[in-house]
Image (cartoon, rainbow over all chains, first blue to last red):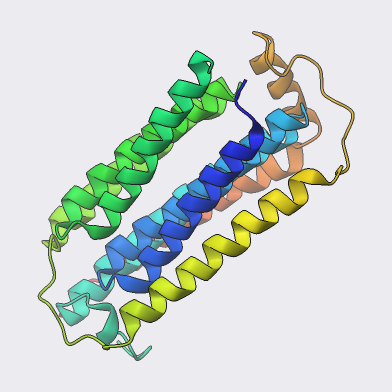
Length: 100
Length: 174
């Protein structure tokens, strides 16, 4: 049995890498993928704690997080496609006005 | 050193290096494929933690549906690699500093909290047995029924939103 601490540690490392990706990359698609990585790290911590406390609530919460992530990706990618169609460019630095 | 620990160490190495590969590859398609690898390794961690249903959902929803959507949009937009733009000189060092602070803080909290005896709920039965799925379904459709229904509404709203956002209005010139 691997100690739960190790899983939490791994989850912290993956979350940090996701946050680093959001901070240093310019491609909004890769920023989006980094957000997915952070969500995934959070899920890993949830499942690890669910295993530690022998409770199903953590696993069910992860189930809901996966559903919300799917909805978020659908809307977010639609927004990115729309921005690309109007501005012909998706560099994150040039998206500085709400007006299309 | 048990075999499970060896599996954990090898897989965590794969997970961290695929996350790093996702961050630093120049081509967005490679980033997406590295992220698929990361999701699959995390699914194996879920199996190790006794959560087979979550592991399968992870593979079908994340590694399957979400990443296919990502790859589709990357190739649709031709956004494999953006032209290098003028960058802020202090952005990268500041970002790395902030990430190191975040990592140190979270690791410190893990080991500070792990020592204290936290609140322990009464265990649900059969977390690690083959009754896992049945027990989980019982809890999902009794205790968590309202969140479940709200999630279905959320998915419907997201679907309608995505269609409305990308819909071409008739007669509108783009």
